[in-house]
Length: 501
Image (cartoon, rainbow, N blue to C red; front, side, top):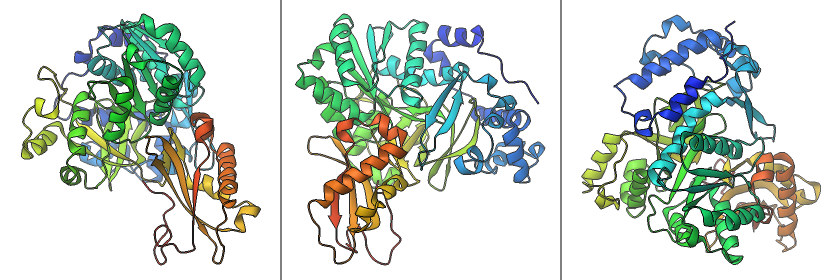
């Protein structure tokens, strides 16, 4: 058995700290990312016991995987057939957790957590995504910056991962101070009042609906956000460009393509890609041209559009869903992350835009001196496994089912429901659940609060992400009651879907 990798050396940190972002993202030679995937495969076939067993179970001889087409034929790994099938240490290099120095946790469909060991060595790879945002969008290498981490702190991946990557940027020389109030609004406001006046800009990092809540509640408490030149970093959810504009108005944004950025990340893979001024500009252009968006993405809804570095996280598409490979403490090889989406090459996307008459950055609303990075794009509609993302928490139908299965509730309902997130006229997200009543049951207004309270109780019990990410005042779902076989939500004769995107 191979030894686990040594602790991160000064050389690794020195390379990140002393190498300019332009060099880190320098153009690759054709086929370089594919060769890197093959190298990772060969290493895992030797050094990761679980992966050796996984290959043997699929009757695969590692010696026969000598080309990228052969790599593409490897079986997909996922949570059920790999992450939950083999002991955690055996999924790590050397069959040991000794190579990891930190842990992240994500909730499962029944609340059973999945643990993801990480190390500072592999975190440096992800820190480049943060550097892209802080450098290219916020010009944080030129401006003193206060970064306020508004993600939940604890074992959950968002808060401490973000904090650590921002610390790496500060160590690299960015004039950056990192504050960590987490998702505590009172502490966030205390930090803003005390520290923001001493910096040229303040960056709020958090889940989209929570950041909006912070902005609105702060304004109500007398905080003049515009005075602090805020920038916003989001993660976890798809939002509309209308919502971006609405939030931009709250902070006095005059540059919607560079005043905010969304990260595409997962607990298992880290940050996989990030919005850039170019990707936002293209998305905003598409948001006013639904026919072009439909042609490009194949759907009438607008996905998140980010750029990614294939040498860091390598994407493939399998039946309309995303597959990723990348080096981690638990390395991923053709890992099916169950996100619905697709890939677009840099040149191919520009060819598409030119076909619609766009020939310059200025026509997309960007400054003529802006220098986009020649990186491919990945687009993401959201989870393809029937989860709903709310304040960054994955809400599973199974969690809601338990709330409806309580004896007093079962007397009214069939157990069928539709779970979705919705948005109020003010742009605030809420959890909406349409519930089917039993035949002959007449809806009573007392039913709605009872059902909502039962579901909330079970969500808090079963889903640690919901309990820790969602503000208390946003936890109660809004219930609508529908007659048996209501064609709008519960049509007869078709397979029922418990979620809506």
